[in-house]
Length: 363
Image 1 (cartoon, rainbow, N blue to C red):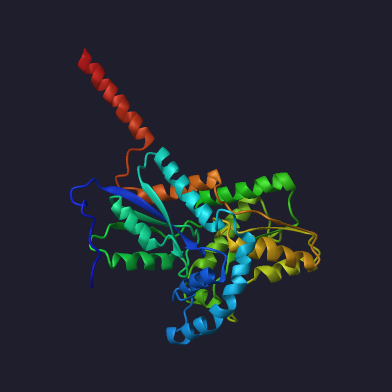
Image 2: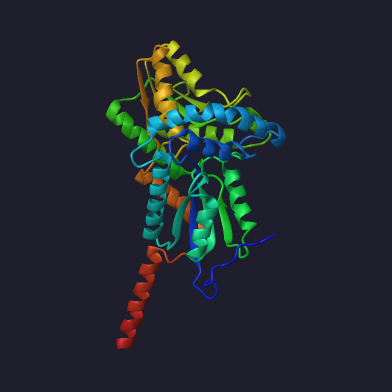
């Protein structure tokens, strides 16, 4: 095996700590060609589709990509901004705000964001952190709930990069923060502000990304962690059982996925006489195709067509200050023990001690 050469200036340089903030990914443009490249990388990941390669890849390249790329590109076009993909824009901004929060709390670290699929890739951003002198790297996923299809796939990509690297930095991974009090409080604050402005709904739906049901039977904790986030959020909002539903969206293929499915749930609520429904997506920390198109557009249309009268989509956490603080606190806990700089209180204490020593020397 050939290992990548190390930076020429690496010997004797100061050691630094980096944070790699990872999200799922997005096409580079809302075009069939760009979407095809993105879907090919995404759907060929064995963590995402657990079907033998010899069976799956001919289906993927022979049927799915030719048929789905144009349809998906049209959907991406409905949510694309003049500055690009919402997911990429929000993830980039979150990374910058996270570095700012950590810096304000005494952690002199470099934060870079990466996409598991698409650009900037995990490997390229790890290379950049190494070039900047990082000898310790914390890998922080944008996924609060652990899943082998997402969190573990990020770990795979990092380990693949490490397998090609001669001088591997110290690595730590944040696998989950689904029950973090700061994260849940940020979600609750976002929703409560919406309700203060628009009033409360008849029913509240928390829609998480779906995964095949068999992953639950095989031991993936994702379903349980989504349910716990849902319970904690409902408690924070003061919602009683029967006033809210935890559902799962983005089903793909004919296999059974985690239930209840979001769109049929919305239709059923409308048919039962629910006039207004509000939907939030706690598992998505940045607005993206799955929230802005699948929920805010398709979900709305399904609910209204089934007899509902009012549909409110509540945006993701995005750049919510409370969310950035919660994310920063999660990162800070996992950075513990690594030299990242003195915290403000420690700096103040050191300054006080220095002043006392100087005063004593002057006497």
